[in-house]
Amino acid sequence: MSPVSQKPARPPMSFGLRFGLSLGAVAVIVGLSLGGAWKGVVAVALAARPHAPDAALFDALSPAIRIHLFTALAALVLGGVLMTARKGRTFHRVAGWVWVSLVLATAGATLFITSLNHGRWSMLHLFTGWVLLVLPLAVMWAKRHDVARHRRTMMGLFYGGFALNLFIAMIPGRTLWLMFLG
Image (cartoon, rainbow, N blue to C red; front, side, top):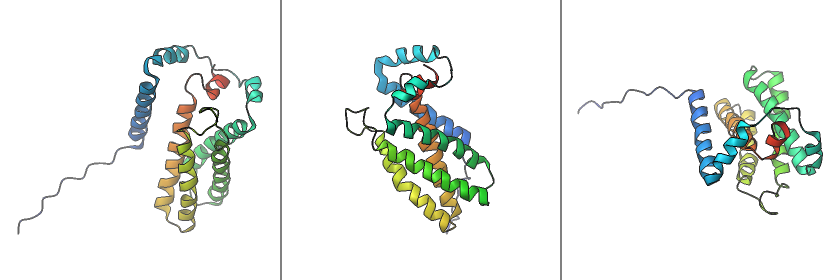
């Protein structure tokens, strides 16, 4: 019997590299979907000037979009705090339940946002289905003390569900872009 040769273990890819590659992939997909319009989007992006939120624009939004924006931004901030805070303590558990509630409200509000697709759900609603399926699993894994699955799922929800969607929401011409940069 000959000894089995093993390949040397490849070091895991760092989080920063994975996140950067993910953002790059999203940028390529968005760029390809825009076709020839990408030049106009780039021109608008370069002309952006940060400013205080446009209250008149916010007031003109439907209640579902207002709830979605408010809960999504609150979940983004609280999620950032939770990612950096010490895990397993009382703060983590209480803030985690608040975060789960914010995420459920954010996802629930999207079910009533159909303006992108003429009164029907759009491809972005696939994120809603993903969140409504995965979030209860992440909570269940925390209750069962399956820390590795809980951590992986919550990080996926936060970085995939919020950071990635924030990138999509900040495309020039969309509501969040107009509210803060347009």
